[in-house]
Image (cartoon, rainbow, N blue to C red):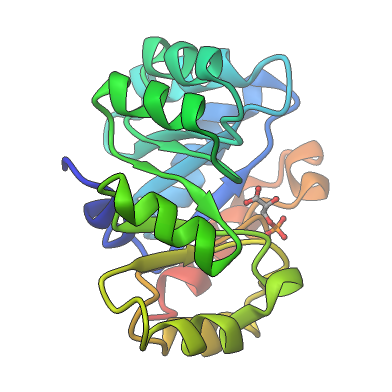
Length: 207
Ligand code: 3PG
């Protein structure tokens, strides 16, 4: 796996995961994998996020673990150091883009407008995160830009649910979708990994 485009092909749904208790990281990754989802985006939103990436990279080698919510050059470097196999950013600045390229990892930089997507395309990016998807025009937006920007593939994320997922996955410029609904905070707090596995299995069957 070397490109962002390859990332989009790993699974119909990229689980966007917030880990509060580092002990939840490995069982969550195992539950996703058991449900048929071979990729996990661990967001850098909690103090234990980097440790969570380290643990999953070491203990669940069969899942492709990446770092999400990368918003600074330092975080890109730290995530790569922790063993992340890919990076995802909610939006993109030149310095974050430079740092992401410097890691050598595949990554999905975020864009929410046509101009942002065009700037990233100018830098050689062809796989993007579309964020925040629902708030930025949703599936209708992506459908509208497939004509003028046919070379770009997206992972829309933000506000997508199991019921809205199919309308995105039907689009030719959507490689996969991202969402946190597979790993709700409530289920993780309750250590209900069987329920996570069930949600993963439903998501894996979406395409
Ligand atoms: C993200 O960072 O990708 C989003 O917070 C995930 O969006 P969701 O929680 O609405 O699925």
